[in-house]
Amino acid sequence: MLVSTRAFLCLVASALAMGQSGCNLVPNNWLRQSQLQLRELHGQNKALADQNAAASQSLAQLQQQNEDYKRRLEVATSRLDNLNAERDQMKNRFVSLQDQLKNLQNPLPQSANQKFADLAKKYPGFNFDPDTGVSKFSSDILFDSGSATIKSSATQLLRDFAKIMNEGEAQRLNILVVGHTDDKAIKKASTLAKHPTNWHLSTNRANSVVVDLGKAGLTKERMGAAGYADNQPVVPNTDEKARSQNRRVEIFVLAPEAAIAGWDPIGSDRSTR
Image (cartoon, rainbow, N blue to C red; front, side, top):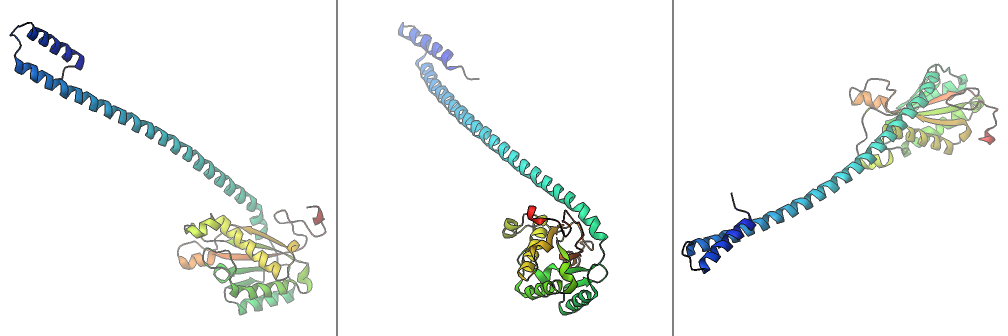
């Protein structure tokens, strides 16, 4: 074990004093070795001091990084909590809507039923249920993958749909447009920027259909939009064929007096909203 610097200096000083007094007890070789050891010890102490300073600086940097990570984690946790709360609110919002839609009866006149049946024969990917009056559009016929922009090839289909709803007794009826997705999470960066979740994608697609039907002649007072994300599959999402069936937009035809998701029955004063 090396002697401390102070103790070693005292020992060297004593040896020098003895040498100067003429005493031959301390050889010159021992003095030279002592001086070399003193220099080596001094160098070691300086290196240790430098290492200690560097370690202290690294520790301070790590502590700062740890604080930064804590703040980022708190922000991310807060955002996740907000998203979960938003998701729960959206689920609760549509629970009663789902139950009521299951019990809907077809309010369309027979003439409109026939026209929608003919429309289904004309456009593959469009289906019509004469018992409920529900029209079902495959998302693949309306949208590209991950998109909520209506395909130009689907514009005429939506125009034909709006035309039927603007004829005869169908003019008094309202519609609710509902978007659905499959169970695949959104991963593509460009898609995430516009549709962070399947909730966003399903509602944005429903909104796009509403907007296009408005351009085709349906008044906004007759329309509503909703989205279920991947929570209402028609078949289990076991493969791509099944998923393609679950990616869809459904349009429910509603009688004027129907109160769905806060829809005001006809005759209420919409000007006050």
